[in-house]
Length: 303
Image 1: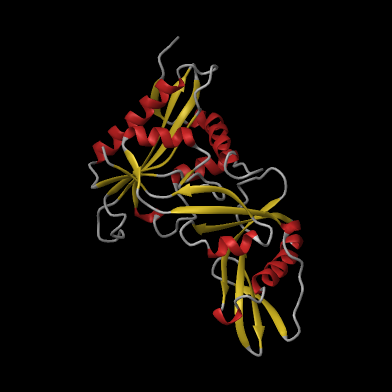
Image 2: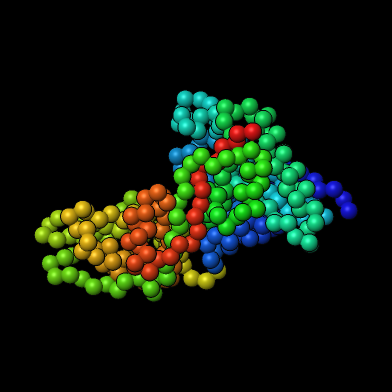
């Protein structure tokens, strides 16, 4: 059997790489996949990261090939060292994402191929001579970032290579729009729909004062992406004024948003919160949300 080979990504790899990426996406969020065009675009730039993406000075994509099949791949970024780059990112190298097939009888040498790929990633970071080395799992799909707990095989690779989790853990929640509270307006309370910072905003008012708002982003699937099944949206912001605590306002706002999401053809709604907070998680759990997974952000290489 020929030995596994690690080499730079070639355009001819695009279909196999997309299949491998979608295997990992499917383990995090249901019924979501990305297109070949999305993957190729993300190798060149990250349009969603409009602040940090211009700071990237170099991008490298590597694949591990076994029996003419891509069994692992990684995308690396080097951030520039000039003053234009934010201090946290200045002169750092990062494994932006690392995907591989779990060990299986069909791929008896996949462990060897994956280890070769990780060694090549560490060698590339060393050649860049950056001040710090980080790793993540930022695939170009909704709700896939950090290192999801549903990827234990990737976590094992990172830890074996000397990466340690130093950042936050976030809870990712999901609810079916059909399970969200129904819209039940309260006398004297009005809700306005406007454009917010992170999507469409619904703000509740009483006696001229804003009591709280929710923002839902229904643009998670850009035209070059496609999802199996119906739509997906995300809670970008949810804020309740302390004066309105305990009055069920979050349920009424969710009901207002649910009406809008149904008109948009959205059937699932995502939410995110740091695991150490828990405030929104508890409120959303009572409104039909359940935990989808947890993801650990911030992995640093400490040999």
